[in-house]
Amino acid sequence: MKLVIQRVTEASVSIGGELHSSIGSGLMILVGVAEGDTPDDVRWLSAKAVAMRIFPDEAGVMNRSLLDVGGDMLAVSQFTLCASTKKGNRPSYVHAAGHDIAIPLYEMFCAECGRLMGREVRKGVFGADMQVALVNDGPVTIVIDSRLRD
Image 1: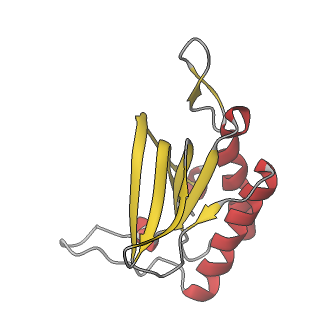
Image 2: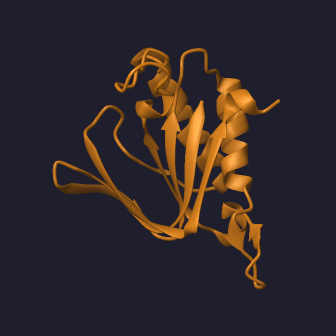
């Protein structure tokens, strides 16, 4: 499972020109679920995401987490994070999990982050053609792959 975590001052998801969800200051997270991912990957990544110290303290040092600053989270499923680009110029998505695996794990990620934060995680719509807008703060962008945790 892969996450692209971006510290934002605001982020939103629109579908068909209509605003679906939005947040203020917090984290915009793209979630890629690959074949072989498990609930253990979800638990590890959700704990990392909410506790990652990428918000500035009073000295301007990235020393605070989303929990510390009371920020919001917007999580959007994105199978393209699982792209293989080894051959040619057209990415292959054969390693992305199918809907039967990806949807429950994405929903579990959102629910677990919400439980850890004590509030709802805003979401996109799995499989929808979404337009994602954000203002990256810093810019701060972190990529985490659960398969690289050891």
